[in-house]
Amino acid sequence: MKKILITGGAGFIGSHVIRLFVNKYPDYHIYNLDKLTYAGNLSNLTDIENKSNYTFIKGDITDEKFITELFTTISFDSVIHLAAESHVDRSILQPMEFINTNILGTAILLNAAKAIWKETQTAKNVFYHISTDEVFGSLGQEGFFTEETPYDPRSPYSASKAGSDHLVRAYHHTYDLPVIISNCSNNYGPNQFPEKLIPLMIHHIKNNKPLPVYGKGENIRDWLYVIDHARAIDTIFHHGTHGETYNIGGINEWKNIDLIYLLCNIMDKKLNRPDGTSAELITFVKDRAGHDMRYAIDPGKLQKTLGWSPSLQFEEGLSLTVDWYLENEGWLNEVTSGNYLKYYDQQYNKR
Ligand code: NAD
Ligand code: DAU
Figure 1 (cartoon, rainbow, N blue to C red):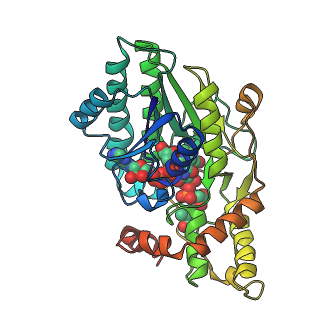
Figure 2: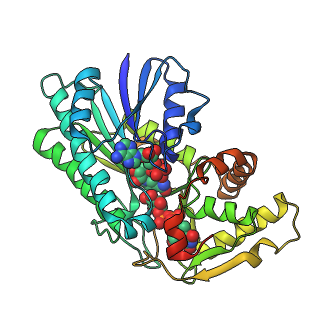
Figure 3: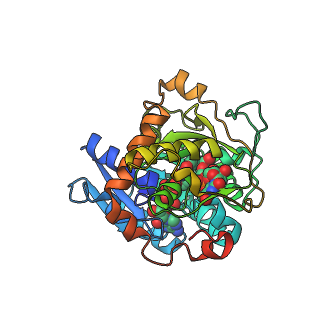
């Protein structure tokens, strides 16, 4: 049985990747390694937690002794590495957590993989690092990020992800470690922690709270449904070329304010409110420090070489996402029950 370690599998994207792999590949054993930070939640995985080809391991990727022992004990064939601190606003307030987990944690995993594959490296070994388009910096009104775009990270989050990408590439060039990297645009869908734009807005519209729009709401993001990202990860993991990078994106750019109006319209209909009710909650607030203006991915390489393309139109994906949040009130209450957004109250007065 192929033993695959997926890190960060209790988080948003990781839980969708775990579900896809556990169900689609009964001959793989999937190990989910997660520290269960505020962003990790095992209730994301209740439908597969008892499957015989799935094991959860609670642990921290920055704990070198623990990681070294884990790799020695289990001898994973491959690693799909998603564990990270992932929220830009938090990275502005607490950069060291991002530097520790995203850079140091990735280095510790690379060393552990290198150590166990050194003597016995086979074609089934791969260290696949899941990264972000934010490493490329910010675009003006024109152009797209390609795999050749030079790195120009501008927040502590994106700089820490860029640092980890560089380490992954360095281990390939220096030690011949079989690696793949993919850089994806903004994901949305079920199970996203309600600090990111779309679930935060859904949560606030439902509860009649102000909708905090940073600056003038003119920044642009390129949105991809999370299950399409998980499908892309599956395709790249199985068919990608070692040493290469793949950009993943939905060819779906939205100005934040337009997206928020669209969401308000969808929510008015689903909540049987008169048209325009939710949009009255829109509140312009202080801009994010160093706020990148525009991200847009050219996923041409992935489409042409590996045949992947997004399956869902944005309106359809957004409608499914809103339904999921409205139907899973218990999940929302559970993840928002602590003082998880206390720092937000101080910075943006969001609650
Ligand atoms: P998330 O914050 O929802 O989940 C991160 C997971 O990592 C959580 O389960 C958390 O408990 C775990 N984790 C954090 N620190 C850890 C540590 N030290 N040891 C072990 N586990 C730890 O993040 P996400 O949005 O699902 O993103 C997953 C990955 O995809 C990240 O690497 C992120 O950079 C990348 N990414 C995210 C997006 C996006 O739009 N969300 C887009 C492109 C790339
Ligand atoms: O591009 C990929 C990246 O997308 C991932 O690597 C990150 O992990 C992920 O968090 C996301 O980063 P963003 O900063 O783009 O996502 P966020 O949802 O935080 O913000 C999206 C846009 O909405 C951004 O322009 C800031 C704005 N925004 C966000 C929040 C939370 C608001 O206007 N108000 C808000 O309350």
